[in-house]
Image (cartoon, rainbow, N blue to C red; front, side):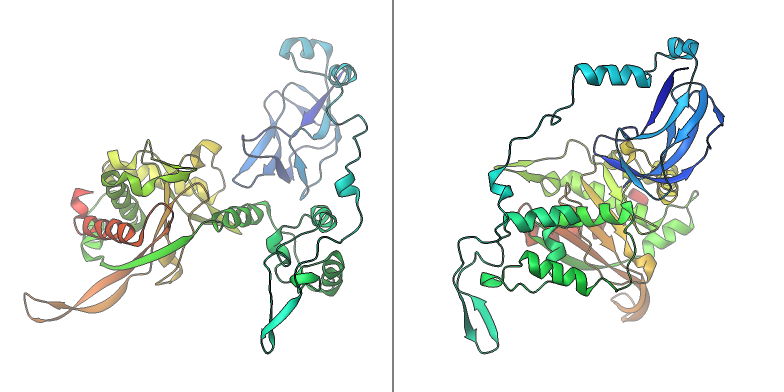
Length: 411
């Protein structure tokens, strides 16, 4: 009988691999077309691998907790010839026949790369280290510590390391350069330390923050009174979350000043075509950012159910790729953790992230009764790409958000 491979599917245009969370079938089980048989976790959500046809599970190669790249064979289905004709699925024999006619690129012996084949860890030496202050040697040139030799680069690739990962290693090469020997010694040194495997979510967050930090980021802050927002929320049905008030005010402020939400691409500032704002949702070992669409065009009361649904699916890791793409900025409520101040970092594809801290009761002077009255106040913070927005522009944008929050009935 024919066999049909169970492949790791392409779960999104930017997703190259996924981790097996749970196997829902065993060898010998009968399955139906479109039945979810394997649960996988990507860097954005938990999804299911489904069958393409009816059949019997004849082999399972996937293991729980292991990551597999797109296209990897996770198992096999034994099917009938009639089922192949009915569904048009490709059998294992069909795929092997294709490969024999069109071998994959790189199957031929690759031409030797003389540059990377060089096992010498040397390079043109950087200037010697000259102590400018006693006990604080600094290189006289800029090349040494930043240079990574081909051999070192190849070893880092073998270990899956990035440049940021070796920042803790003291280099003994010229100009403070980290050599392969330095790296191996450090690996031996931490061999017995407790460790755990980073989850796909943690790796995704790490990669996004590494790319974000290549830009000059700055943060401004502004205290804002929340009493009117809290009163409005108490009298609303359904009740909007505080973050939704912030999201709506942010979108309205950006619609008045769209240049602030642009991003730099070469010599151009690309402006947003829609005011789609993301909201940071804390999940286990990371953060997901579902995106609310056209927030500037919808009144607050019409956003509540959409917001609650997105946040709920975000917490359960049930977001689709469409739910998380296309945002121009993000809001985050770090006040839910009791924090009054923070410096959130915008996503690599966004210029801005607006955060709000925990509300705190403070005495505020009232000119009407000429005495101090209790008020709930929280700090708004805006982190921005300083290449696109200056401090003054960011301050005006933040001030406008604060003004809009004082008129919640108009949001």
